[in-house]
Length: 477
Image 1: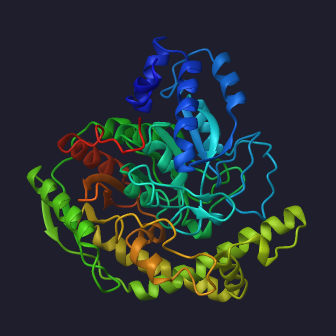
Image 2: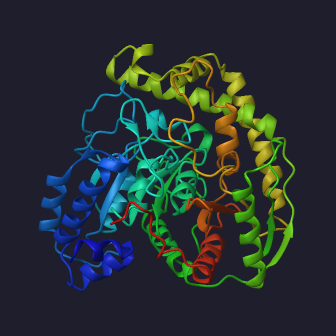
């Protein structure tokens, strides 16, 4: 298989070819590594390489019946624990010691046929919506290397967009799958809270804000990856009802006539960038042309208050992460081991009392009930994924003492995403629009709790109506 042919297929197509013995897993891995070595110097998407072990695994693999049989996979350097690879969360304080066991989600990737071969770039502890850690340096967007690929799954997104892999692991605690998907012209689904188990190390994170999944170029790859990884493990604190049919079937099944609301109003005041608003209006019009009932409407929430509550919970989570490393390693956290942004959040988090944390969680749950009520009369809610097109690399200074999670540049960029982490509902960003600068502009579709099926049905329908697979960034060949 030539260099060019590998990147022209999605993950399911590559898996089918391996099952049919039209191509060997070793050839796929060689192609992925070749593309990684060609493009990574421009993108800084990959920060740890495990090529030799992956090639050995690919050579020894006897093709079976797995959907992603022999397909190369990249794992994010946050939570993507893979035995023999380190997980540093892009933080110098965390040692580069290889972990001893796979996270359950990684074990499920492997059972689905994927072969992990490297780790991808992320921001420090996964907090910012851009990928520019001091430890690894900035990742760059294949559509314009002066722009961010987003965060926190930015390295994964850059690699998928450049055709290094068709699918890469990510996670989402405030938009960290959807933000990079929007920046890089990809499909980014945040599943329902609890859909994918965080076993064996975690029950939930920050009261359920954080979920696992992937970034992909096609809706069907995202759906099939969810089929492969969804489901609880013993001891999980909660989990949603399983779907009636496989998610992959949903991706190729047009939905019934849906009741769809859309909004281009910034709920924090001001306006979204016109490129983002235009993409949303265009998506709403396309849904109407496809026969859906569409109206302009939005849930009424106090987003100013939500931002403060989210900051309280997230700051406590940063303190949790750092204190956990202290307990495990005995190493004292000191300012020089962190970016100033992270260090300030750590100290803010240590000042949050137990009662303040529980009050914040309770108020976020109240907001979740109000937001969920909007979906009693609407099946889907459309907004911009982001408030602005991909930011320029370096637009936010994480070494500045003044930069906080509520920084205006961060809020105006990532605002539409966190509400779905607060509510636990699924949301998907799909690439339906490019602006005059040739930058992808994502559109976000949110659904009811537990109903990824409708989102995947609609996303599959939109993918057919306005295909994006043939769009290639400058960093491709």
